[in-house]
Length: 102
Image 1 (cartoon, one colour):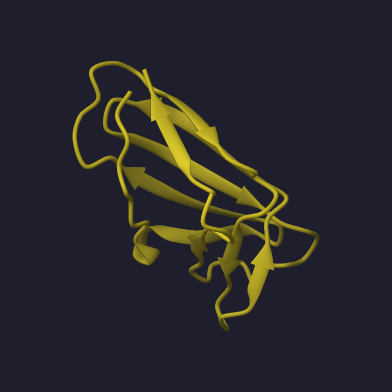
Image 2 (cartoon, one colour):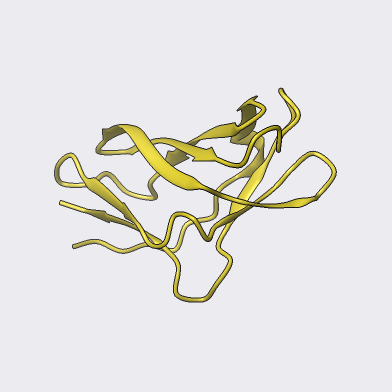
C-alpha cells in the first residue's frame, strides 16, 4: 500500500452543478497498478464555495482511476454551489483521508 499527503489544488476544481463539484487529482508518483480509492467518512468532508462558505458533503467519490490519479466528485445538499465557481475540498477532522491502494 502507498500512502501520500495530498494537496488538492483549487485551480483544478469547479462546481459542475448546484449539488456537485469536480476536480482532477494527480498522484505524486505513478502507482504500480490501477488503484482503488477509499474515502473515510465521505459525508463529513467540507467544501469551500466561491464566497468561502463551508458546505458539508453528502458524498465523495472517484471515477476514471488510473496509475496517475483520478477525477474526484463531491456532492452536497441541494443548491449548495454556484455553477462554474471554484471550490476547495478539505477534511473536517484529523482522522479523515483518501486512501489509494493496489
